Image (tube, rainbow, N blue to C red; front, top):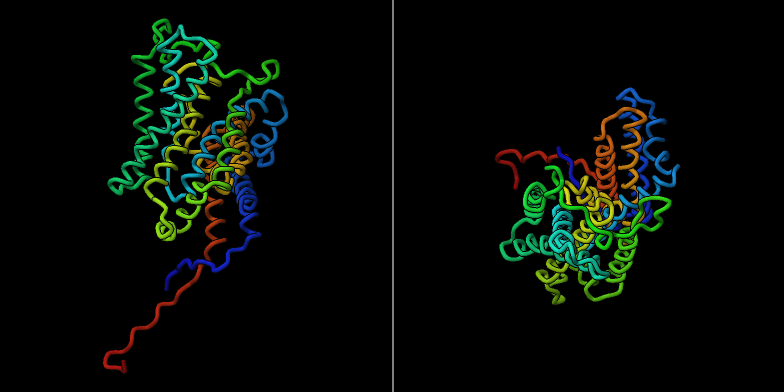
Length: 364
């Protein structure tokens, strides 16, 4: 006797739409149980996580700051995942984009014109795309598993950033603290409403990228190829679509948008290159992509939802005295329930009874 998953002939469209909401509801229930186990009032805890960050204008600005990189990265990941390329290394592509784009104000401090910021953004995209091209090359040339290679490149990028921030790019006047020189005004993303909060134009870049990629996936030949090769690679090859070309395209788009998110974070929220520039946006964006149903437009709402867990975790730390890791637990629970709901929508669980072996010498 064993349990097996059998693919449903026609998955329920209704539950496919409701799946993210069901997953969110289950996450709230599991979170409430977790807080009760920690000895905290679950209603107070959930209020701190999901309501309190929305009660002040400045916190809403902070919400957009944290949502921008999540949306940008998730939009790129949606292209990869829909083409059946499992890019798990967006965190590394984010870091490399931040590094390469930061070289302009660090290496050329006198170059302060209206071209400075656009050049930084372009270099950031190039850095992320180049880092994303490595697992694409290894997959297409050597049939290497892109999950492993893209993930290992994250740790390479993190160590490289740490070496730069503590070594060759460290500010000589920074009292031996790790980090580069502070960026001049020409190298910083401007704030949208400086008098109200810290939200910068990174969120505008994220929204524009989401619309462009949605249009590409919905109305262009490349988008059609992404969908076909992702759904049925054999049918795509029969139609003459190149799996190699599509693998490179998906990783370049995904890496480029992650790199754009990296330099937007460095030039907008941070203002210098530090040894740590991300609290794990590249990994959290995986949840955003799936919660948004692998849709660039769906990633917008999902990005704000996951950004809320970052702010909620900080608020819960102060009001309830709990660990900052609780927010990560919320994110993990949400991904677990999203994947679980999707599995049950597309597959049915069957209990299979093992048939008795025929007796020796019996009829055949």
